[in-house]
Image 1 (cartoon, rainbow, N blue to C red):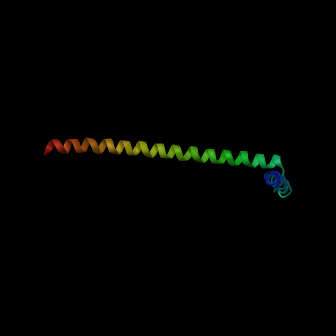
Image 2: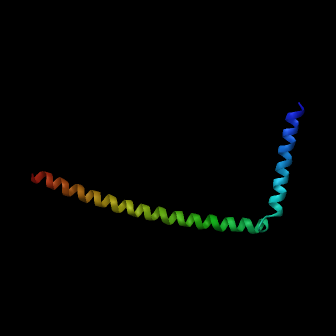
Length: 80
């Protein structure tokens, strides 16, 4: 039973050490980091909205083109 307890203690110790080092070497305070993440999230959200609108417009254009081609193909088949 000594080995599993040693492994658990090493895991907990490593977690505490990692958290401490993360706090020590963090580039800025927590509040600043949260604000940066919020700004980044909004920027990414806005970009994805623009991409989705552009994609939707392109799909509408494609659907219109396909409908037009379908009508022309139908007329061509009746002429033969």
